[in-house]
Length: 66
Image (tube, rainbow, N blue to C red):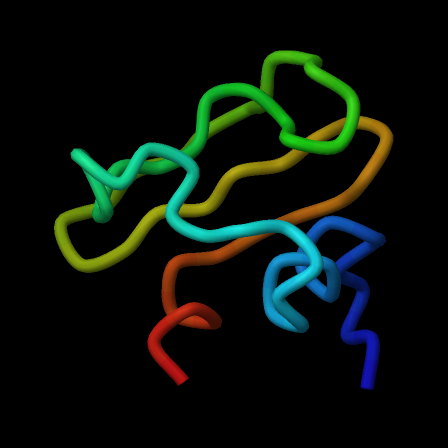
């Protein structure tokens, strides 16, 4: 069921990586990849966000709502 997500999304969705990264700000998009520490490219729209790590793939806020 990997939809081009890379390694990051499956790790977060399976619970391998605790989410939210900052419990005080549960709706913020991640700026740093929790797997490698690199800065992520973040796109924010009024309804959602998408964060992409060049090494570990994409994570979208709508995937976390399921």
